[in-house]
Image (cartoon, rainbow, N blue to C red; front, side, top):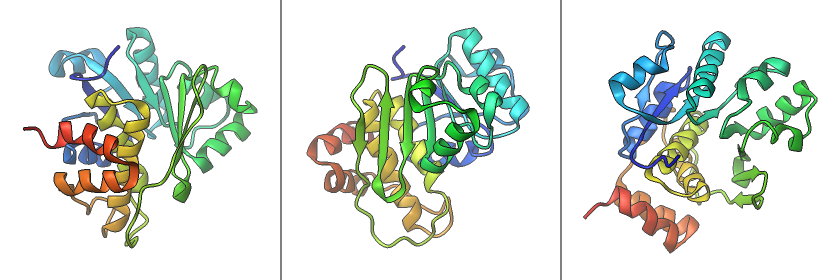
Length: 232
């Protein structure tokens, strides 16, 4: 199912921050609170969802969203947060994307007893941030991709980078970009968050954002993003 032109819903304790980051890139995600557990009702109000990002939150709600996405045939991305063991496996099974940082990925493997290959039998693609080393994209029947970290200026506040990365990743996917390009957008947005004071203190100036993407990832990445951030 193509994501371009379709709504993205975000849930969990990070939903507000992720939604804010997406809005700064010109997206209009559906931000769900803990009481909005019926995705059919959500789609009746907002239209068909191209992707549901299920972030960390109350385990019961996380499972409810994942169960509905599977039952409705909706693609979803999963950030299991602090879920461990069989509970985590049950939650993420069937996800299109597993989005975590390296520490959470390691804890997930340790608590479930799964190898990375076994984990990838349950999700299609793993997107894992690696701090200053960038991010990696791993999936079955696809080349292992390492996306370098973007060029950063002085880090003012380490908070908020993870949520900004997820926001950029989801925004890129919503535009219809490839997973690699979307990861590059996520990395660049995360850098903006780290350079600002406060986890949501950053702003996106489209021309500058495209320029910094070019510095970090080249002309092709900047040209793709400019089609969405700098419409004629």
